[in-house]
Length: 341
Image (tube, rainbow, N blue to C red; front, side, top):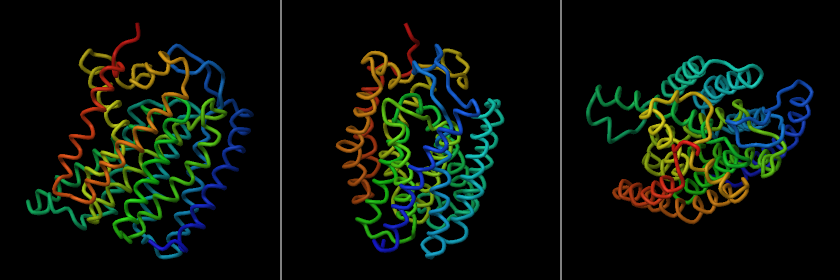
């Protein structure tokens, strides 16, 4: 990864996202794209939503720059434009006027199919040795993983700063690991640009938030990070465990909450406040300590384990297990999926 080739693009993405977020906030207020406090939310004041569109614009502009510099190829650029762009578009429509969960899910799955098809099967040693069946198993797993990653950020975007800070962490940590291990295929530069754009937005979204991501931002971030992680895996950069570890807090809380809601017969697609981070925000009386706690866990616990999994791929499964077991315990204790009293 050449510092000269990507630093100015990431810096530009940061400033574009920062400036565009202010404009989106004004636009949302003028057009009524405002989240009102409700019994199913975690906020107490009307707040404009849809600010994540600033991240979308900043990153896609950076993607064109990466393509012009030949850091990513045309197929990867099309993944961002057709896949990430489609997810962002349906999210923006949902921010303007709520759409059905079934429609959103179908669009997310279709975008994941496009992404997996364009990315291809460059190097999946744990699957390809099974022959044709292994290739199709890998493709199906990729579609499911990207679709789940897309909705993961939507589920976890419930308090100020948590989702945008997570995007900064995963994108920044992924870029750092690729630089550290000498991976030079443009994906690290793309991750850095996404992290920079997310950081520009985060300055407006940090508790107390002045603007929300909205579905346009949360879906876009979840999809794009999942796509970059999948591309890095298929290109042989790191094992998939590295990316699951980096997203460990989100993966654990969202998965446990969804499982518990399904087991007791709740309608999983309806808004709710039963994630562990939402329980903690009410218990601690503020969003800030929860967002800070997640960031501390990410940096001082999950990042070292992700580095270990990247450095010693034979033990990646062990690293995944050891890193996530305490997170699972914390999520259960904090009330992940438990109904409100």
